Image 1: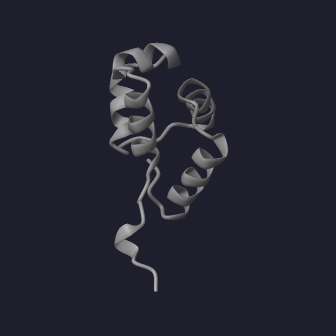
Image 2 (image 1 turned 45 degrees about the vertical axis):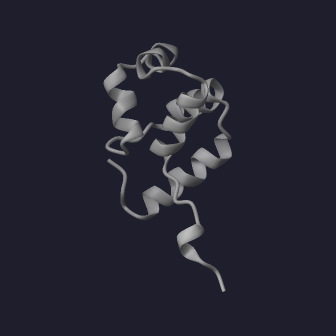
Length: 84
């Protein structure tokens, strides 16, 4: 029997935040690397806004995240009707 409370729920925002902190980047530093405003990073991390495919590619490169994983989470979010 699977205990669902032990399963980790992940979002793009959580992945971005955890990866950014692991690399010891501030939101402002990551924003500079991606050529966006730091408020954009904040909105992504809080899942208020969602990065488009171009920024998903940039995020995977800068943060060392799997593009496949980011696209899967992106697809699941779109299917749930949670995109903005």
